[in-house]
Amino acid sequence: MTADLLKFASEIVEAYVAKNELSPREVPVLLREVFDTLRALSEETDAIPTGEPPPDWTLTSFPESTQQRPFVPLDQAVTPQAIICLICGRACKALRAHLTRTHGMEVPQYRAMFGLDRNFPMTAPEYSGTRRKLAKQFGLGGQRLTPEPPENE
Image 1 (cartoon, rainbow, N blue to C red):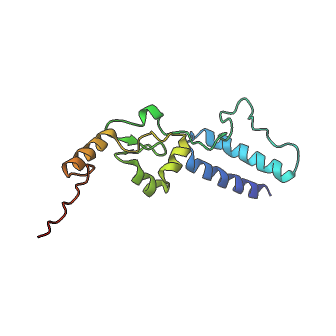
Image 2: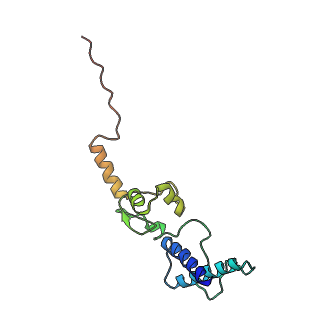
Image 3: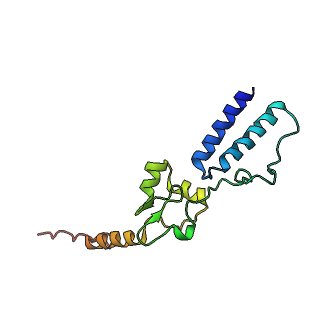
């Protein structure tokens, strides 16, 4: 029974660590917390942990919300040349393609994950400016020209 609980606890911790950043010292603490919780649940006793670890533990508990901790602070995520992915820290000119290819998510999911508003940029400011200039050079984004009616002879 203990071996099964340890296996389940390690699988839970593995899945958690794959999506959340933890220091190497926090992993064994998390494993112990998950294992103890599973053991208490399997014994069906009132010894289920309350979520408050002993004072000597460094890990407090699982996050309270579904929002993930960003890789960099939000005020550092936007630079003139790049947008930093808050999940993995990669610098991108345009974040939408990176999110789809690498993380398998859409922009609304990404914004919800970090509590970002709709005004948070998904494209680097300099890159947006360059694309805007190119579009104007090619005549895109202007008013449409209406064709002149053919003259009846």
